[in-house]
Length: 265
Ligand SMILES: Nc1ncnc2c1ncn2[C@@H]1O[C@H](COP(=O)(O)OP(=O)(O)OP(=O)(O)O)[C@@H](O)[C@H]1O
Ligand SMILES: [Mg+2]
Image (cartoon, rainbow, N blue to C red; front, side):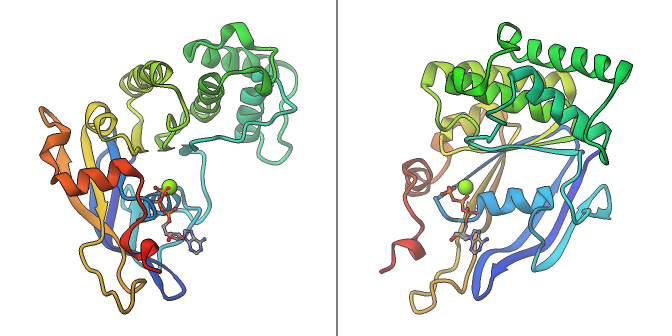
């Protein structure tokens, strides 16, 4: 189980209200895609779900209980450019993720446990198509391969929730399509709950079961930081297309334009 209940959630940094009045119920196994203009608080929202940031107000419950204050193994995150360990091979990067997970205090496994972990890491890497690169170093991989490695590193701990922050943003279109298929397959096979930020609206509509649009409904030119973004559209995705959003909103999401507040001199 991994049901998120978000009730009147606010996040502010000092006087700067980033997110306000968020209300959301996401059930186990949903695939939510998150879109919104640049700077409107999407990454901040993922950090709240991860437990890396604390809400300023409101409740964030995981399966009815307040989210643990520390990021836990039940939640895995992949950023646009993930910092895999450059001095470790592909296999060791994934193995280390497992070791840190299984052996919290020592960060190492020994003997049979380590051999089993190696097999498991290799099997995970096979799933993401990196079997031929086990002994290579990250610098010797393409961008798409590095993202596959990052995904393997996250998934090997069998998280219940996968948080993806523009994971394919830096990839070429062809590789991107492959990665979309990969993530969809993993989602179907594991039943993991996915939250994925994207600036590519068609990707958002194609991949998810539900599209969450973040936007700022209120704006005071005198006090640009006084109001935050909230979820203005929550769209079930069956048979929906990008054209279903108001054109100006779609443009702001796709263009990576700064929000009004950031463009205010
Ligand atoms: N730790 C922090 N301290 C102060 N302000 C912050 C902090 N983290 C984020 N912010 C501010 O919160 C706002 C939202 O940032 P966030 O990174 O969540 O936006 P985003 O929607 O992910 O943007 P992008 O699409 O460009 O990635 C920004 O104005 C940013 O400056
Ligand atoms: Mg962001």
